[in-house]
Image (cartoon, rainbow, N blue to C red; front, side, top):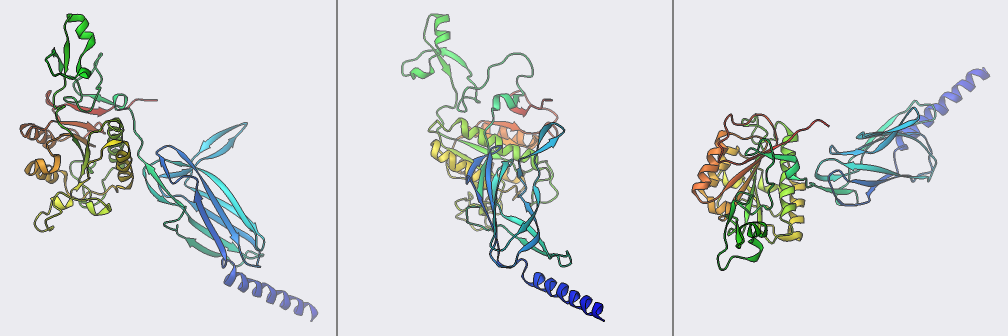
Length: 407
């Protein structure tokens, strides 16, 4: 009889502690995340400080924490492989703790910022259990917004001369572009010096060769701004518009090209605007060309984003922040955007030239370049993929293709 009483007492204790853990295990459990920097560039690393605090008297004999980073960020961990170690970059880290009452655990992680964007850290799944492992309790926590757990990853600049090759020069030596403000981004030649030519345009090498002052010909430098037109589509025909592009990588590379162009002109006092077929309402200060009209009056213009002019180093940083915030979302087909630009060329470009950044090059875009040339604006292309392009590229259209090499 006494054995039955002992078994009954043990069963009551097990059930009682199971109920206590089921009702209170995850109560008063505090989880916080802070980042070491709130703004970095792509491929840079930050430290993430994770704090887990048990604020109640009830200890936790088993607590599993799954820490998950948003897509675009990865943990930088080291994994032992024999006598060596290798770098691993997971998005989720699994940890198991034993937390005493009133105990706090603080950890530091290295996190690599792979893709531009605005990220809120703190997404975690916690599983607590009792002493006997009979009462698992799960709780999911979403990241807080507006705290010290937010990091903005700015798009990084790359060397366009190394990463892209011009369609005009397929082999051999050629002159690299020296300025974004020449025609089109290259010197067109030299001529005899004329009174009034600025001194910074004199070609001293040619002057020594000809024994006479020679001036670089830089057409279109009289224009005081230019425009970056970005295409959000990854291919000529997308399945869903409005919607995300079918291939994110090549469109993300368009952001990198735009950031690289902005970096080149950051030391110049030249206004640059960004035009894109992405929803304008995703930006606080964003606008469309047809802000004064209703969407019924201008169904296309109201869906095309046009940034304010960016000029100087401080403004260029604002432009990079805008690119970091920009979602990969197509608001209107690129053909309709091009038609709208042709119908309102000055409203979009203010008379400036265009650098067209796209994942592909179509015949429609080539026709757009010719039409803009007749309107007095030059267009050059940066293409971030090697397929889905027009079969024939005219020689008088300058196209820069992304170069892919085996490393």
